[in-house]
Structure formats: C-alpha cells, structure tokens
Image (cartoon, rainbow over all chains, first blue to last red; front, side, top):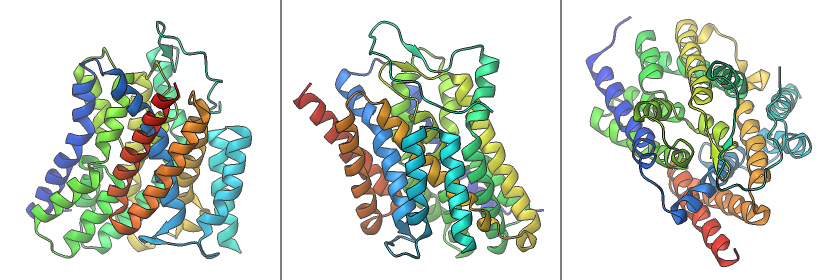
Length: 107
Length: 254
C-alpha cells in the first residue's frame, strides 16, 4: 500500500488539467449574462455531445470503424433505440440494452 | 422506483424559469441519486475493469483508488495507467490527459446558463465532478429557460463518483480473482443510456428537424474524427461543428 512520488505527481497533475476545463466555464459564465447568440449555440451542445458519444460507443472499437456482425453493440443498439423511442424511459431503455447485450454474449 | 421520464415540453416562457426538479433540496438530492442508476451500472463494470487493469500495470491498490478519487475521469485514467506502465515522463502524461479532457469545457459551458445566480463555490463543486456520463444525464434535462438544481446535480455526482471509487478499489483488491462481468452486459449500460438521453433530449428541443440534423452531423464528425484524430478530440469537433450548424439553421429560418 504505497504511493510512489512519480505516480502521485502524475495523479495531481492530471487532476489539475482535468479540473480546470471542468470548472472554469461554469465559474465564469454563470457570473456574466451570456449573449443570446452564444446561449443558442450552447443550447445545441447537449444533442451534439450525446449523438457523438453514442455514435462512437456503437461504431468504434479500439479506434477502428466496426460495421461487422461481430460488433455486438451495433446489434444491441437496435432494440435499445426502439424502446427509447417508444417508451421515452431511461431505466427501461438501459435495462433493454443490458439484457440484449447479455443475451448476445450468451449466443 | 419512479422512472425518469421527461414531461412534454412546455410552451417557452421568457419570465418564469422552469424548475426541472421541484421539491425540497433533500428530496432533489435523493432524486439525483435515483436518476444516477444507469451510470451506477456502467461505472461498476468499468470501474472494476479499471482496478484490475491498474494492478496489472503495476499500480498499488492505494494508487489506483487515489486516482479515481482525485482524477476521476474514465478514459483518461485508462490512458494514464497505460502511460505509467510504459514509463512515460510525468509531464508528457499530464499534457496528454489535458488534451483528452479538454472536451469537459463544453459540458461546463453548456451547463452555465442553467446554473446562473448561484454562489461560485456551488458551481465549482458541480463542475469538478462532471464526466461524459453525468453531463449526459443532466443534458437530457436542459431546455430553453430550464434551471438545473444544484442539489439534484450533487445527488448524481456523488453517487457516480462513489460508485467509481468503490468499483476501482474492489477491482484493484481482487485483481484477476474477480469473474469477468462483461457477460452480464453491464458495460453496455452507458451506451444504452446515451441512446435514451439522446432521444429524450431531441424530443425536448423546440425544433425537431434541426435537432435531428445536429445529431446526425455530430455523429458523423465524431466517428470520422475518431478515426482520424482521437475519440476525445472528435467529441470537441462534433460539438463545435454540429452546434454551429444548429445555430445557423435556427437563425436562417427563425
């Protein structure tokens, strides 16, 4: 149970460079009134980021595009998206996804 | 367990900010804990894997756990451990992680209009625990004029990080002795969560077609960028390109 100085320096350094972009915009922008144009721009960020995260986690495997039938995420996402569109339920969608993936891995 | 269902969008109101999570702060904190469930499933699976990997790469249990407490950034932690195992210089590792995590700037900025008029320390506490997944959770609740409650955010954040740290510790303690949990499909919980939240958020946007256009462009840029640049920078490129497109389309035909 030891912490090496080299590792500690890396943990603190990486934490610092991670915390700054996490904190700074929230701390500064919430103090000033954001111009309407910037606010409209920021309003699109959630959809853009969610679509980006989803697309990457389904289509990319180890940094490569995987459109083969061996890409189980690509198959499991179909029932998952259907349930999301029909029920609009987060928990229902997540359970569908997890169960679909577990079943696919069993096969 | 009450489900996480976004109500029908209300007509836009300029004067009355919509309370996203009504109720007392105590109840809102608990609502945040409950809404965090999908992240808990995913973080359990990935946190265990991280703990095992960190031990394999030569980190001590304390080092691995400390990293999840202080750094708390999924993909960046895997990269860091890989670089430590390769004996990379500390500065190079720190710069790499800085580049990987710059995308959090957009999450933080997108939240800012919804956390106005709050003491800075509260926003700092919300920001320091922002991850892809917790931002995804709150993003599905962001609409024009909506207000995000700090207590709800704290409920989500504390639950998510507690899960991450606990799973890391368990993975690091047990190492190779833990069974492979991937058979349970839990690692897919986060992907499914992104899918659900994307659908909810698009349905929530005032202009459906523009929102779909933004999503398609973001997905394309994210995948193309992931192949050409890095997955993390591709998120930045996707956010910039797709949000700009959305804003331009919105202004073209108001």
